[in-house]
Every structure is written in structure tokens, then in C-alpha cells.
Image (cartoon, rainbow, N blue to C red):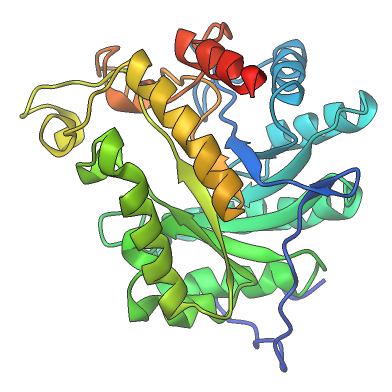
Length: 329
């Protein structure tokens, strides 16, 4: 394994050879995927997490609806998820994440970043038939990120992982990073682009969402014409805080209808968009997550309400009606 010295950036692979990201199940390409956050009511990162029984319940729900999921870090929970998929022979492939935080002059953060990175490499070697790609860092480069890190540090971890595994590697970020030429420096280090594009946060309503997605996709493709573009997050929340002075400006930025009915319509049209464009797309997200937005945020906070299932694992009416509509076709 390469030196774990997080202060010394590894040399880039020369010549750089792109590894194709081609997730499949029984040789059938997968384009419809979903983001999986597993914390339930009363649970949160760094505090309490799900039991093995709870994880298995989740995976059984997932396996009925998706064959490809994305998780955001390489830790003990990721290991348990992979172990259950293997033991129960579930038809699920996984994009494994590595959570990275800004580590400027912070030895403890560097240590945690390195720990997550080395755990990722360990898991890839143990579960090579389940893991189909690696996402190193999540929204670490876009200007508004609360954990924005130097590009050189991100690149170091990308190189460290890429030099120790043979799977395709990427980093996830908002379209507002990938649509700028400054992103080329990072893009040259990865095998495909993983882009987040949230129409709700960008003031879109359902009727102009997919026109906006098309234009956003094309803008990024124009800059990164030699890379596959995968949508890493896109979704439609079912509740939000309409207070214009409320958290994260959601009452100001959100213009579209936020409801079960709106999510149902979005899911139907997203399905059609994926079928038409054949773009690998991760729906954000499977389950509501009440820990997000902070403990003091009210239950209507938008960050808590992106799931197509409630936190108690019952499907929302929007998802049930979407499935009925899908079955009719």
C-alpha cells in the first residue's frame, strides 16, 4: 500500500487511464439508483447508529426497488452493510463513499480523513464483487460548502485510493462546481463526474425542472467532454420550512410546490428522463433523516424530508402512487 503520509501528495498515474463506471446486475446495466442514509429517529453520526437488524430491514426494502445504492462514508456501518449484502445474497451493488473534511492545520481531522480512506481500501479488497465505484469526498469544492477543502488535499486522497484499487474513482460535488473551468484540475484525477443537481434548491418548479436538468447536464458535458457524467443526487422534498428567515434560506430559495403530490409527479417525470437519456442517476433519497438540519430544527426542515420512505420505513403515498403508475406501463 502507498505511504499514508497525508502531508505528501502522491504522484499522478502516468499515463492516466480512465476506468469505466458500468454498474450492472446480471449483466444488465443499472441506471436507476438511490442514496442511502441509514440513521433513524434518535440516531445520528458520531452518536448512535442502526443495529444489524435495522440495516437488514433497510436492505430488504432497498432490494425490492433498487439494485444500486450510494453511501457516504467507509466506516463500521459500511462494513456491516456490505457483510449483510454478501451473506444474504442481496441483488445490490454499492458505490462506497469516503467522507472528507477540511483539514487545514488540523491533525485530528487529517487523522480521521486518513482513517476513512484506508477503511475504504480495505473494504474494496474484501468486497470487490459488491462495490462498483468509489466516491472520495462529498461537496468539498463548491463555494458554499461548510466543509470545503483545498483541491490539493482532495487530490491527495483520490490518488491514494486510486493507486491501491482497480475500481473507478470519483468525487461528488454540486453542479455549481462542475460547470466551472476551475473543476478541470480535479476532473483530470477521476474516472467519471458525480454531480449533484437539486432543482428545488435552485428555485425550479416541476414544469421547468427537466429543462433545467438538461441544460445543466449539457453545460457540464461541454467542460468535461471526456468523462462520463453521473447524477449523484437529485430529488424532491415533501416538506420544508417556508419561513424566509428560517434555516439555510429554504423559505427564500425554494419556489416549487413542496408536497407528496409534487414528489409523485417528480418521480414519474424523473423515471421518464432517465429512460430517455440513459444517465445513471441516484435519487436523493430513500429514507427521511430527522438528524439532518440539527436537533433544534423543526420537523418541517427540508433536510429531514427528502425520502420516498418515512423514517419509520413506511413508503410515502407519493412513492406508492409512483410505483402503481410504473406498473401500469
